[in-house]
Length: 139
Image (tube, rainbow, N blue to C red; front, side, top):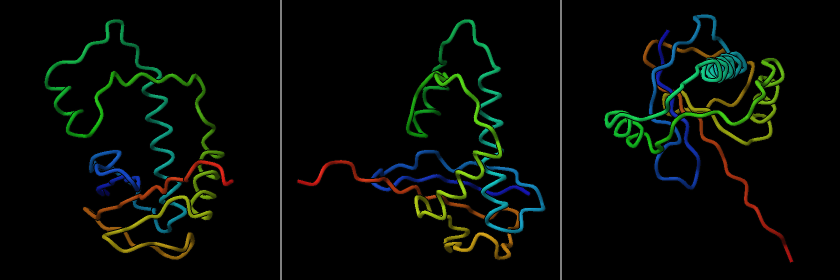
């Protein structure tokens, strides 16, 4: 099933990622499964990007325009050499949700419980809002 996914970070005007179509398995029935599927897709995308070798890196004007519309123009280089272990990455994402580091909305309705039934339909809109921690010292 295809759904639309947007990732936002509070304090930024533009979404970190533009609204993108994402394919999810039909078996996505809970928030825990949704988080697991999204993490799996991101880890796979990172692996694919690391395996892709560009001998000559350059951007065409169309690529610059499309990346600029999404809010960031770059070559897509991955500087971190390690690929996260999938199960550990899923557990970390679930823990981050439990700790309130991000919220998940399905069609503008917040989803709270990890194991309650979740009904997703073709074309639904998913929004992940990441909260930014304040840094600094208290005197």
